[in-house]
Amino acid sequence: MTLNILFAAASERWDDYEQPLRRALSDAGLGDAILSTQLPAAEVDYIVYAPNSDLRDFTPYTRTKAVLNLWAGVEDIVTNPTLTQPLARMVDDGLTRGMVEWVTGHTLRHHLNTDLHVLHQDGIWRNDDVPPLACDRPVTILGLGALGSACAQALCTLGFPVTGWSRSQKSIEGITCLSGDAGLRTALSTAQIVILLLPRTPQTESILNAETLSLMAPGAMILNPGRGTLIDDAALLAALDTGHVAHATLDTFRTEPLPADHPYWAHPRVTVTPHIASTTRPASAARVIVENIRRGEAGEPFLHLVDRALGY
Image (tube, rainbow, N blue to C red; front, side, top):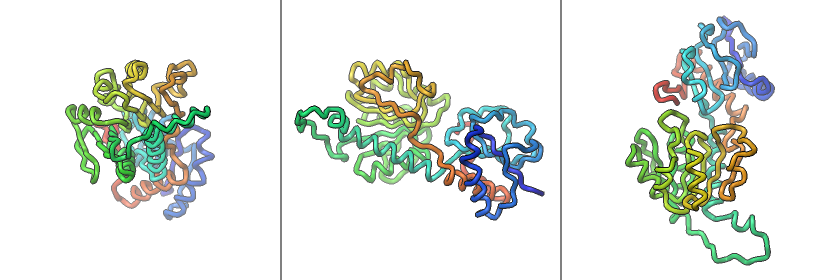
């Protein structure tokens, strides 16, 4: 029986992914598989999927063994009642490296107060603002999944004391791992830099709000490369206006692209980056997708399956 793989994502992504997927299939000994954007639903074995696809009803895909998401986030698809097939999220080394680089870069930028010198090239010799060493700058990461854990370990290697918080208790060498409501309060109150890498779920909605922001030390800084829904925007803007939060570097937002009239654009204590912290790279993502297809055909367990009850 022919192996049929449906590519279901925004049409412009087909040109990016077709050749990397074909190469990965060939390398895995699956070069005879049919890969297409158009296949009869009842004959599809695997769906390579992105939530911006037009595909919403999975009911006709009765032969499909797995839906393989191209994105790390699955919040836009995980609650679809027609999706009864196994769903795997994207856990990709390229995705992880990109996130580690963005988080490390902006953490160091805030730690060293680089903006002070970049934005003030005015002939004034400002040498009275010397940053502490990394060992004296505690960092908290909310979310200790694949991305959060990798970022925590990278920052720990640079000498930052890192506290991580997650819904369920984790154990990571060199990282202070906390969980639960009391753990969240401790994690926020001890941090000078807070990094958000939680998934979007009902439980993480506005996890940074007026109450939790007030727990942070005056002058703390926030990085959000996770999900825009993790922050109560009005509460953050209020905290920025008073200086309680010294700066927020934000990569994800409730509405994307961020509307041109949104207050974040003009706020002097906000840096907006356009959801570029970590992007799926076709070459490495294709290898992850095809490895799961290979496993499915070999009768091995799929990798990175989504827990529908948790939502990620």
